[in-house]
Amino acid sequence: MTQRYLILQDQSVYPGEAFGAPATTFGEIVFNTAMSGYQEIITNPIYHNQILMFTTPTIGAAGINHQADEAIVPTIKGVVAREIADVSTNRLQRMSLDAFLKRHNIPGIARIDTRALARHLRQTGTQKASIVDVPDDHAFDQLKAMVLPTNQVAQASTPKAYANPGRGANVIIIDLGLKNGILRNLRDYDANITVLPHDTTLEQVVNLDPDGIVLSSGPGDPHILSEPLLKLIRTVQSEIPLLGIGLGYELFALANGAELEELTFERHGMNHPIREQITGKIIFANQGNGYVINRASLKATALMVTHMDLMDHSVQGVRHRDYPAFGVQFFPDAAPGPIEATDIFAEYMEIVSARRGGSRQWLNEY
Image (cartoon, rainbow, N blue to C red; front, side, top):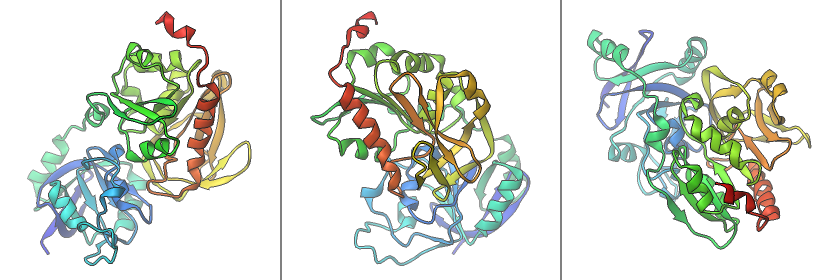
């Protein structure tokens, strides 16, 4: 195999072997500690424009099965792994991981000590990185000059509204970087879904007369999203059941006066135990975030903590005390698993069903 190099902005160099597309790439590098579900992770829009590193020793053994895609096209910048499996016995496999990355012009690099690299990133924080043929001064100069984009949501969101029809409750999803797992879970309840772009207006939402609104997960810094979206959240949450997931949860918190703190390095995986505060139930769920709620800031809001991470005690879920609105930091759609967090959708749809068909008089004001 062809030798290539992973270089970081702190001048670190990691030699390895090329797979995937033979392209040079630049992006912010993040690591994921999940032991399975690499295809769902690679196709998750929250990793838009990022180089994705897996700490699990081997990926690729399951091949690629398009039923597991979380987006039509992956938009990551690269894949870093310890070892790539060449053989798969999965009967659902349609192509290898290597062929899949080649098809989408995404480079990869293997034979990297990913555990050591993860420890390095934990110490130094998230960095810019590049996969190159030669780690010379020119490559480092290009990496240093690279400016990370700040409009990830605009790039990942659908440009036009579209429908995912059902015969049940009329649910709107505001697409901030929507993953298919959210659609699949809502369709289990036969929801009649309309997906709207991130810059949708209050008037467009009201015209659809929704029974529920979901703010999807997505990439990037929640502080960059525009004030009109926060105003929309504050307006609809008092009357329409609202669920925020990932980035949507962070925006729900910001709209209600909470403050967010940026993590030194982003947290991605499914190995953190999360406690449901009311019942004491412990769950594990797929996670991917670079921000957490400042717990002290909640005292001045109408939000209450519903879920807490038992490893770092960070807030993982909040609910409005007065309105039918709540959110979770983790991904409850089990794509990839574990599956115990899917109860979040059952809880949400129960609220939607209970309030469905109620007065819509307030909508006439807008």
